[in-house]
Length: 329
Image (tube, rainbow, N blue to C red; front, side, top):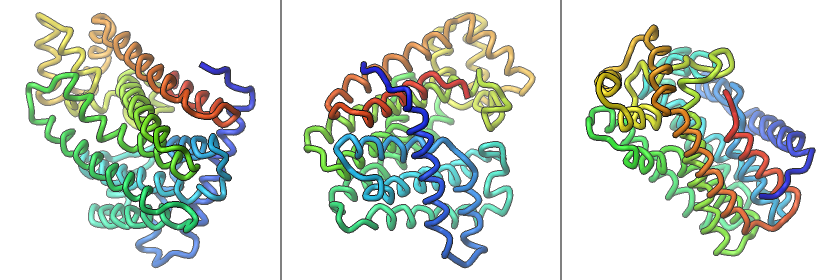
């Protein structure tokens, strides 16, 4: 690993702020308001802007200027938020980032249309800079969209299956979560003019980072500080969702613990039972297993990132990944 410079946080925060400003600018002259107000509501709702920052830093490793790749970065952020709007409908989630979900604040039809339009806007942004190679960018993007849709479908399919393994789950999140992170690494490399063999290696780095990111999310669903998490802690447990920690608990458990977690996956648990789930997982070592997996996949990503040219951008990128691995909310 390379030592991150002391200004990494400042640099990443500056990129986040620039992306926030650019998102607002991208929509300022769009109308009608009845269609775009929900989209503005989503994009102004906060978020860490992890994906566009990662993409930008990869491109900057190869000498790209921020102005040249900002539209590609915005594309992946708009796309990511589109998936959240539709995910909230599919999951019947009332809140996102501490605010009412779009289908709650407006209605389900409006949320579906807002998501559809955000998808179209993301494609528009992806190819906005005519100086960048549109065909390679679109090839990566289209493959990512397909993988993500398959992953999302598997996620909903797993809800009705009794024999989902941890390995099955990892394959699913390779689509649902890792596909977009992997694409961010690829798109940043292409926009930055990286050699083709670097693009392939960085795609695999993004896949490993995506697994680490999702497993950490699954862990935080049970262990996070509710005030900073932005959604109900234990929400996945209450819904009986197949996640890394619930499936790992079932894999490890026997006797009464196994019966208890089988019931959880069969129909969820009450909010009042979430502390018991946490205690059982802690005792079984589930949280230790999850943290070890996050560490392993993060190290895999770092190893592949060694192809990146050395410099400040690469150091900032590593700092961001390390921060994501260690986050508590």
